[in-house]
Image (cartoon, rainbow, N blue to C red; front, side, top):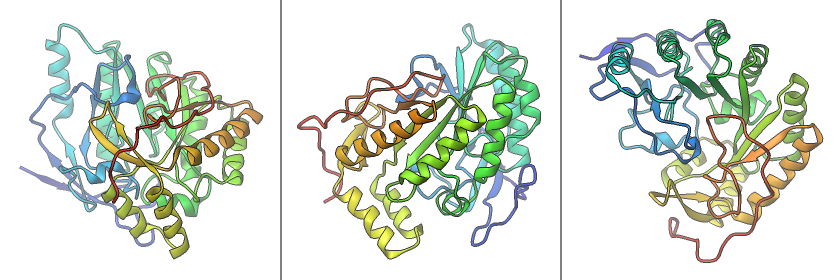
Length: 346
């Protein structure tokens, strides 16, 4: 049976933004196991399992690849697996070998703007940490204060990544309409650092002509370095045809939409996840210039930058962005190997 829950925004986050209505939260029953093996290249070898507490994401980012999934429930609702805590408790009891690390969440956000969701995130993380299982997460939401008290006794078992690609609230509202504001995400960063939690800020995605301008990068790096951040990771936005259509329909301005279309139409199609699917990226030359620009700026502020080789398989990058833990700086992108281009756009 499906239960309907009125959306209640976590903390003091506004429950309405101009032109947007928060999705309806529906409670459903999870049939399969909670802990799932991951196919994400970015996770690296440290991960044994992932957890998605919901199907669908409340942040409604215009570039979100999950909006193109066949089982995506639509922009107007989010499905929360209401029996997750009970099923996880049973799985941990009967498993002979517990996972080393569990990642929250590969196709949604565990810190979405619902009290019920954040309570479930808290209970599942608490259960895992008490069993000695490390937890890792990437979020563009607002983290409740109680989580920092939960994590404080386990600083080496918690790996945090905060997604933040702009400080401009208007740009953030356009790209990520119902995610936490840049100001609130900076509050997450401040509290994570104060709790001595391992932290990387992900400047991801870099959106051509929107978030990859030098002044945007400089303002962001200056702010983060001043707060004590040491590690960044970055990757340009990748798209599939449906996602590009979503972006072009939501972005304001004919000129900007034309430029975005031109960048991806002239770009390259490459395999992701070991060739399992094709994604479209800006041309390697465009990305290399943007990455080099960000590398110079971040280096000026003493920040160590890691570039995602998983999302740039056509470039000679040595490392994954590694969602599990902080890593070292990467090298400058190389050239596009011959024979890599596939067909995605006619």
